[in-house]
Length: 394
Image 1 (cartoon, rainbow, N blue to C red):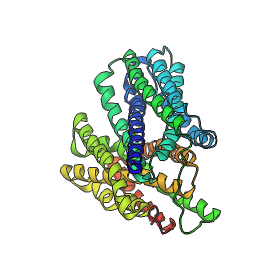
Image 2 (image 1 turned 90 degrees about the vertical axis):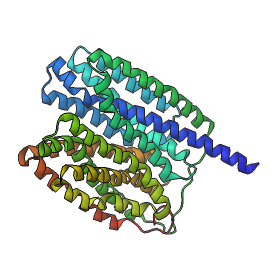
Image 3 (image 1 turned 30 degrees about the horizontal axis):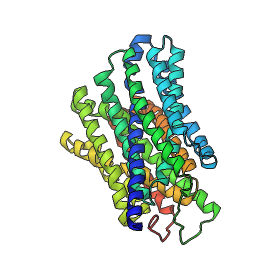
Image 4 (image 1 turned 120 degrees about the vertical axis):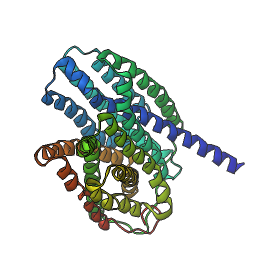
């Protein structure tokens, strides 16, 4: 009887994680549509590149700065229905963008999208950990898989269904679906208020200075990862067009192949970490792509397609592993940690895109990819991660 109840409880918790992952897919799908519709908005409002940059900066700043603050607050004062509020902000942002008649309303819409993201990511990650049944790596990877799929599907969705500004209003229906799912997740959380976050206690107690040092190492690894991700996400299509004279559609197929590798790698990393631990996965996920990134700018088209898939697959396992490692390092504050690292992901990604774009204008696409190929060398700082003799760290 006890075994049956335990199994039923595990199924209930797993259903919550799947629901949150699906909502992550919908959330990131809607938010990745914003840059995808820039050509449409630019033509309609005659926007300069500076004004487009301000829209992006508004979204990224509200998303990156507020996420850690939301995480800190919800760790201390959990608000079960904050997740549906995130969907309301997202729906409001899409509505403003679809109905706007001037540039200022567009910026307000982008800010609402950023607010929605700043609430969703830390709170959803916190509940994912509560519902994980101590399978932290797997649950975080399932959650992250939804986001990766949503980010890759957003531009495709925009290309297929958004032909004019007013079409964006129909995307609010996606947000409404997420709203309904998140109400159910919030109801589940309300009924499981007594569920406590269990934490595996390492056999070595770390000092505060060692914890700070470890967090700095994880941030350095995030910089290496997100900088290379920014290079691939923003410039891979342009690089392939320049190198092999491909059409835009052919280059997009290559990008989707890379993103497919990202999706597969997100779950693969969780499976591997159950056998070898999180620390080795962090090592491999960043430093392990180095031979492939160095070779990428010099190979032929078929080999480049294969290498990009491998790079995406290996690199994708880094983010959930880093979050789980940090959450184990600072127990009891999953929202704070998730908010910090999701915020860093936003901030580093946007800053890297701007810096790499400026460098690429000066040195060219091929030299940019050659230079960026050495970013995974920063993975060597993982040597400073603590060696702790439990399954989560070793």
